[in-house]
Length: 117
Image (cartoon, rainbow, N blue to C red; front, side, top):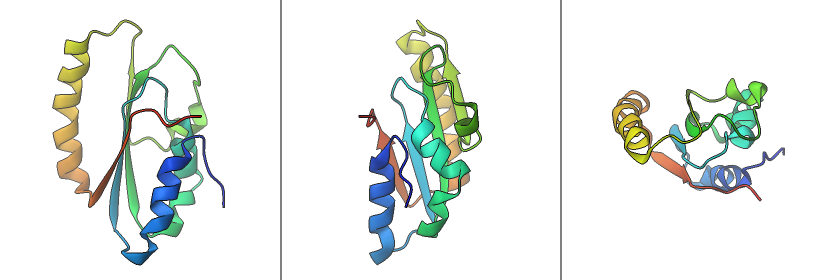
């Protein structure tokens, strides 16, 4: 089975076979674009879990990896300018996260605060 750059999400998802979930959210708030899980979602790797995965990604748009292919797997893609202030970042998150939670109704939220190794 293929694992992306952010393998922690896939490890978590593969352990869900005991109690299958229908809706999962990946909330990726580290500095880099989620190209690992984004690519996995684009390649439909998550389909084996039986769950619908909704991915949110807030990241610095000016740094690695600029992965256009992975962007297809990101449902809410929020590329931020270098130097974005905390107040602006938190305002965007507070505006977008509740709507995304309401729309996707996840049973599990995987919070990624930086898992690339």
